[in-house]
Structures are given as structure tokens and as C-alpha cells.
Length: 253
Image 1 (cartoon, rainbow, N blue to C red):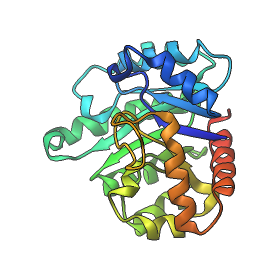
Image 2: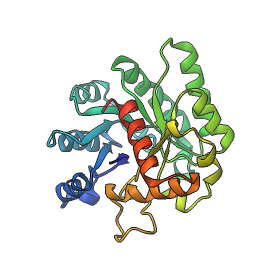
Image 3: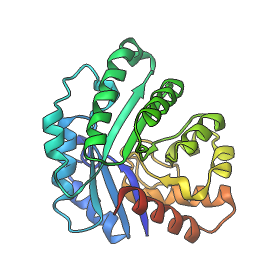
């Protein structure tokens, strides 16, 4: 069994065959968490999850690239009432050139969404691109200001080992996907504690090179598991078991 902890079957890329994609995943013993990026995709993630008794879950949130959109706290809070919502995400910071002009807005939005996290409380799926220094600073302040530690995963981790260590010290998980075939993250994957590693696809993006289709999908998470097993010199079965246990523990599945 595998769990794709970060999928987007709730996106328009799957508007014509979402049911088929999900059924194929479940038939291949692969569970998935569809992650929202705006209210519309968050709502869609919940609607999809509620069609299935087990194996399909939702995360809701407003992605930092949409930080100039209005964050309707009440609407997201209402969505979170579904038992299928297992996380707030993806939320965080994105300093890629085209989004760097509104860093302040991103930080404001992030702090607003962390208030929702504290109220519910749910684990967080963090998005962080070219912004690890600021994200670590914010999380460190949040951890010190609140008695309860935030739980969550830094999705699509591409930072340095020094940054990974800081996240791990906060008891956060590191999520790895098809980016590991494009960037050399072997050293981090070797050093990270096995009980803090999660696997994901970020589908429809970052399709692994071994996949038979151009569009990524949750069953392709097996290629991530295979690659991590190879890097760690352990069996595919062991990495599958450990990452599945990790996901179940973090997201209370």
C-alpha cells in the first residue's frame, strides 16, 4: 500500500476523468490526499473525497501565489467541518520571481491561515519555494508563541540539509515527489529520518520519467517510493510500509 500525500485530481487537468483516475489509484492500493490551492479547488477536493468511504481525502487552503485573493476564513472553516478534510494546505510562501512582488501579502495570508490551523486543529501542508529562510523564521516564532507545536509536512522539499534540519527540529515531515529525478536530493534523502519522510506526486505536475503517461497521477507515487528505496538501500516494501505509516500518523487516516 502507498499514500500519495499531495495530489491535485481536484484540478481542471482531471475534469473529465477524475473518477477514473481515483478508481485506478484505489484499485492499485494507493490512497491519496487532494490538496486545494483556492476555495474552488479546496471545495472540489472535499466533494471528491466525500464520494469514497476510504482512501480519498482532502486538504483545503489558499496557495501563496493567490495571496492577493480574499481569504474567506468562514468559508474555509465551514469546509473543514467535513470529516474528509485532513489538513490545511497548501499554504506558505512562494518567492519565485513572478510572485516576489507581494511577499508581504503572502506572509499576512499565511498567518491568517495558521489561525485557522490553531482553531481546528489540523496538520499543515506547507508550500515553500525560494523562501525557506522566511518560512523557518515564521514557524519558529509561531512555535515559541504557542504551547502546542504545529504538525505538518514541507511538501516538495528542495532546500538544503541545514534547512531540512531546522524543519525536522520542529518535528515536521519532508515530502518528496518527482523533483527528485530532476534535482540531486540524494544526500538529504539519505540523512532524513525514515519516520519523517512522506511521498507524493504533486500530480498533474512533475511526472516521473518512468511513468507511461505524460500527465502525472497518484499511482505514479510508486516511482517515488522506488527511487527513495534505491537511495536509502532498503527494499521497496520497507519504504512503502514506513511512508504509509507516516502519512496515517500525521493525517490521522
